[in-house]
Length: 412
Image (cartoon, rainbow, N blue to C red; front, side, top):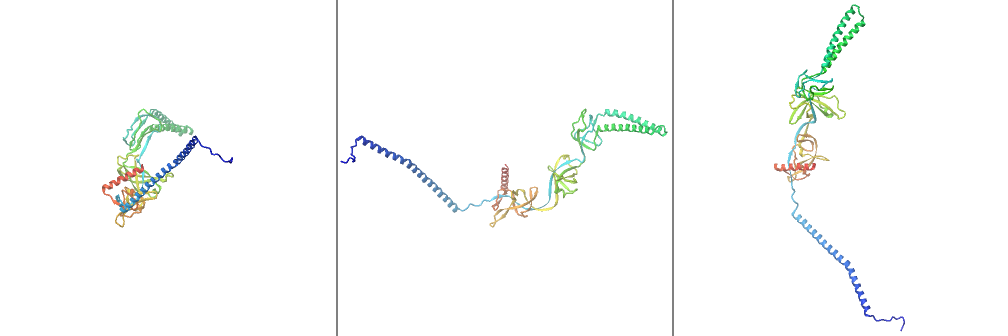
């Protein structure tokens, strides 16, 4: 037999068992490896099938809804409840308003020129005094004594001058001696006048019939020169009102023109009596003054009033309620109610040119014709072409309330 031929050896039972165990282990490992990717694959497949089924169901349900809506037709158009107003003609003159201040024809702030101690006071707040009445007296005891001495010196100087003048006429004295006597006499008289002036300055009197304002001056009080003691307002039955006008308005306003004044519920008429000779170079306004005849008792100097002045030619325009105006970045608009082919009211947006506000209306220069119906309350929620329905009184109140709430929330 060839030596290279392998000789078959019998396998014992132990080796056979080892081989069988190895085969089983290999098969078991192979099975575990397959289960690691087979189970997730089956789970993912089931999830995709479920998602696809749900999506298909939703698509089918939506298609059924669309088909049903198409069979039922479009819902009816709901109208907007509004309040209409008719555009009417209006004629007016352009106007300008200002805040004016009332002033008395005569008034001063009483103050003292010289210092002194108060010895007499007649300054009752609100009291009316006559021209020349003594209002305040300062201590003049020293000045009175000096005045008496000055008068005596003046009398002596005058007597000396008279004697010197007689002697000069007889050529007994020289002209120089006469001039010296005359100078002494003049100085003595000037001293008397000076002291009398100081005494007068320490006596404060009313320069005109006036009403006294508040004062805080008392007997025995020392007041330095220039102290503000009280105000005096003239008692005339008329007042002036001072106010400013823009230069564009001042150029067309003349003296004698009337203006309207508003003070609370009271309306008065005043007449322009004067205008400043120049325009303020900073504000470009000019001061004007008007006279109010027979001023009501409750109006006092210093009060403020609203001044309304009309100017220029009369303007003819179209008036609509102020609530109908809508201001946007592109301009001012209103909604006009017009009938369509079926006779239904539709909102049509119009661009308008506003001139000015007149009470609760606005004057329009263009955009709306006289007699057209414009939307008042409720226009805030309209769009051009929207269906309209005129609201009843109760509904109009609700529309107005909704509009106020909407505006309030917008501001908030």
